[in-house]
Length: 271
Image 1 (cartoon, rainbow, N blue to C red):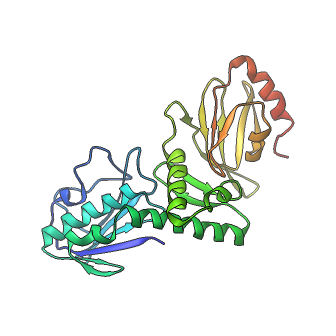
Image 2 (image 1 turned 90 degrees about the horizontal axis):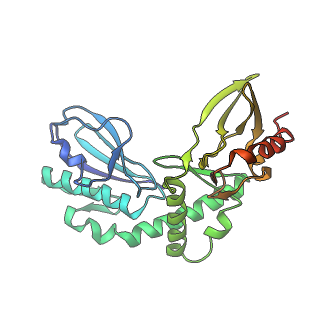
């Protein structure tokens, strides 16, 4: 359900077309060089705001901007800023799913109401996919995947599309941009007996965001680490808040409480 826009744009062109004057712009990977004089693909988002990552690509005299499904209204605004700048520079129009539009008319169609309805439709689509697969559907974002499944979807699917859109937007922002006092646990990948799995460590005296991994590591002693299934987090004597179907906020664990956490973890190790 991504939405694509294209503008005819010849090389070279100033990189400023792709870099709106917003203080919170961030790049995943390299930013475009100035001037842009060769084909390329760039990824950008807004710090503390975006729910998805915008893709901008140039090749064959065409600039293509892809807005992923479940993008925030501000992500749409970012896309439109780039498209208007490109169309104004080229003296042309923008090709959209509704036909060719002058840059000044883009917001007549693509506005906050449109973005919220798209978010609401994303809820419906994800709910159907989850029901068919019986599992969790992940939406990649600027910092981590948002995991939607049996825990979160029943609360999201209520109401009309606009209401669903607001709920999804709030949930995705909580996952992507949590309180900075929660340190995101690093995600690592390992393999054993041809099985690949991801893991993250649970540490004492640190409030953290525990992501959607396969296993959790708990330090038993200086040279011993326990491997637990991800679901075991629910059974440990710790305070945590569920963000979605895969990410949790884990509160600070005092050192004096750590032995109790380890004792519980020993009963939950991966076979």
